[in-house]
Length: 140
Image 1 (cartoon, rainbow, N blue to C red):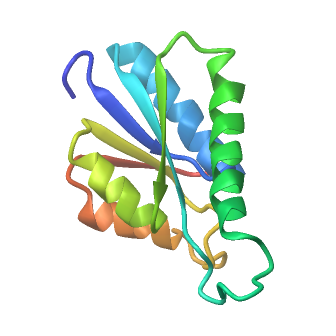
Image 2 (image 1 turned 180 degrees about the vertical axis):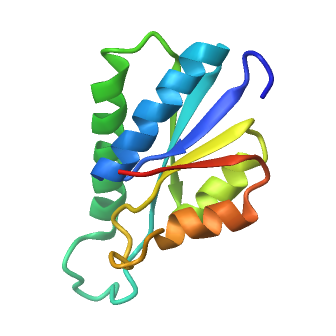
């Protein structure tokens, strides 16, 4: 990792993603890097434009609030610069895309994905397989 590099971390508000954020901030403090927190949102597979359970804007607003709350929680106690970005799309693809401009990708071992029983969640597993930079998977 180069000095003053960029560490990308996946954020979904889950405890594993907060552990990943904590690890990323410690690493950034050691290396002089910035942290780029990536949140992602997409419509659930069952969502319909005709009278769905939530208006379309609510999905994005909810994800943005989650990202902002998590970053704000950590920014108060850290001197590391934390950038934030909300992406419409699958979380794994958002992280893989962001990894192209990163020195390190950090993800939690499991988040709010649909594979709770797996040792690695689908996002962490896919990110590890397809990332364009080294990946750290932080166990909760």
